[in-house]
Length: 419
Image (cartoon, rainbow, N blue to C red; front, side):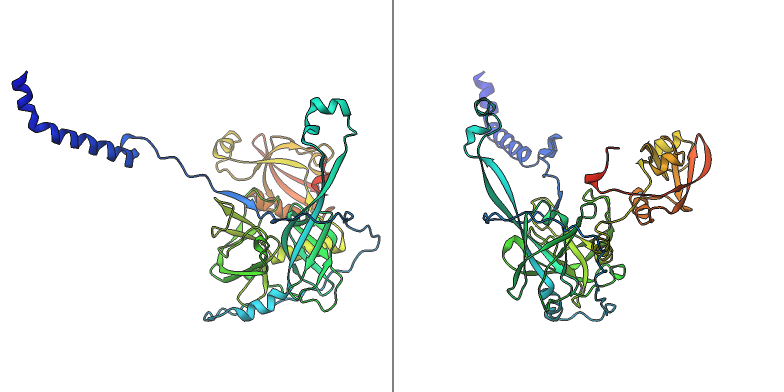
């Protein structure tokens, strides 16, 4: 044994060093053992929540006025087509055209809470019943908006002013006033306010269908309540949908920095014309990471006109619950390609029910246009005026049918019955 130990002694030091080196390498590179490193938290889509601020005094709840006479449509100023020449060294002129029309929005609401934390405990509440005294406090938040008409109409996001009891608007020139809610459209996340001030600065609206990927874009708003701020980027993409933010999505994507408080603010081009209303970001941390989304100016202008003149947004409705086709479903219906949508449910008494559509029918085309994307088709149906006849191509039991129905009106979410 002693002789064996003498023989192995020269090798002990190299063996020990090799074992220690292997341990260090396995800890530094876990994939060598087949283990995976802890994944990074997934990115999340978020509507830019307005920044929280200090409590304000309690004010009466602001509600949309009940008027019988229709309002005239607001007069918007259309911008000239963008001139795509050599980029300037400064965008100060564009900012000076657009920034005065971008406002800060301070919305506040009253919330009630128990005077003592123990009052929220069911054991103590049984001695007092429901007549427990409560205190009121005011929660406030920040957002942005854009003056689009000399009549005082302001575009912003629905989530900026949703549930507010009081809305205050502050202009860049120092003027402040309370705003009147003209109408909101949660399904597009847009809202229209009105302020009563003279000599208002008004932004020009660009034709958002002419926006091109690579165009310079400037985001103007009030991030984190620090005051009006301008950030610059480019148009990264257009026609973004399937984000799960709104029922109707057709976003412009930009890498101009958008942060909490920017919601409802302006996305403008290099000449200072409005191309979109800043709405949401795609982020891992909750802050700007170069992927922001804006509602196109053309869509915002259409929603503005309907909210002002009609008091609501009028959309077409079929009264069906649809499911997109995958290759397996398409094969089960005898279709060679997964195009169209499956009708999973029919609202009793709705347009589809009255036209004889049934669950299990496959909707292939609307008004002779093949259905390639369910969300695009949903937007196309919404654009059809209620009462119009709409031809449909349907597959039922392997047989192709032509059906014509009368389009109904889609009700707002708060008025819609469960389907």
